[in-house]
Length: 453
Image (cartoon, rainbow, N blue to C red; front, side, top):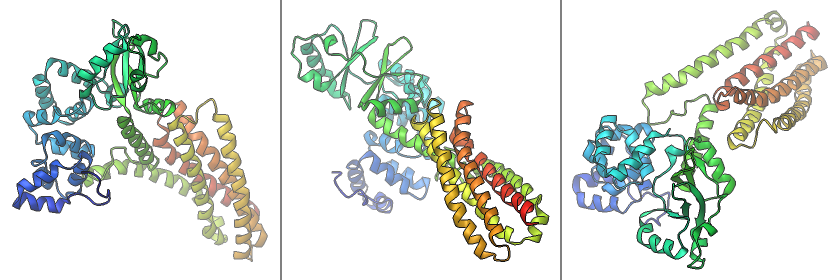
């Protein structure tokens, strides 16, 4: 039913709202045929919350949770704010434990507590254990549904139990082998299990070195484990090694997207909560904090320029050319900064290889500096013939100095912030802008004062 062109929605919000007025049965039928992600897109395309609330009434309970989880957190919370405990319970009962925990974290605490109280004891324990962990940790990402067996079971017994209970578990790729204390002994792939002799004991098949995540590990570390070992699911254990859940690849894809978006937002001095669904006032306040910081750095650069006011007054060409030096430094520094910050996020840039990375980026800065120094020096000499080659040498030297400083700062700033346990993506851009502006203006105007006045 979902083989239609991805660019063409099965149903537009306008058509859905029209059917809500004139043909409710047809609307319910169409919505029941849609995938959760398609329903999420449909809700997101509505112009107002009231329209979303109208359509939500016609989405089947078994699909509603998946649809809501596709929405931005702020919008998701707004939609769920009008749900009572019974409605939330109807949504939660159709979700895996990790998704159910996400929904319960998005509703009012009183409503969440009511829903949890109504759950079966086993489900309640699962959900409460997930809610206990930080949302951005392995424990917060994991789901309690998994298939585990005792280490002394035979392959035949495992397959018998698997046929009976395994169909209730989605994305079942591995069997987890535990001892009598539920300590994780190893992991067996379904492929290995299916092609093993019936009387073989599973402890002989289990891979004891299969990667695992600690419940308290950050979600970014979990994503690195998936990337490094190419697994489809990852067991999660507590500090004692007890198996408490698993993380599936589909959840990690979401984390990778979240982390990449967060880094991109922070490099632009935006909050990672900044999205199109928030009110104007909230977004403006969040962005305004960093704009205020940037204003201070811009004032610092202006103070440097003010020290050379007399020089600029005598040589007007300097006012024309000085933005070029600062702008080139800013772009070059941002290129280096982006590579280093992303490298740190992916684990490719560490303190162990920082020296090699630093030397490479500074070398690139020097090569670029020499190349563009020659270009701008030649242009400036012909642009302002009355100052000639002297002006060309001055701007060339300033360009070389600023591109060198930009490369050095672009590499050193995020590494230093990482060493201080400060998110490199959050503050690096603002500091870099200050460095390239100050060095650019000071070197160009300072050299001009020495050699032109």
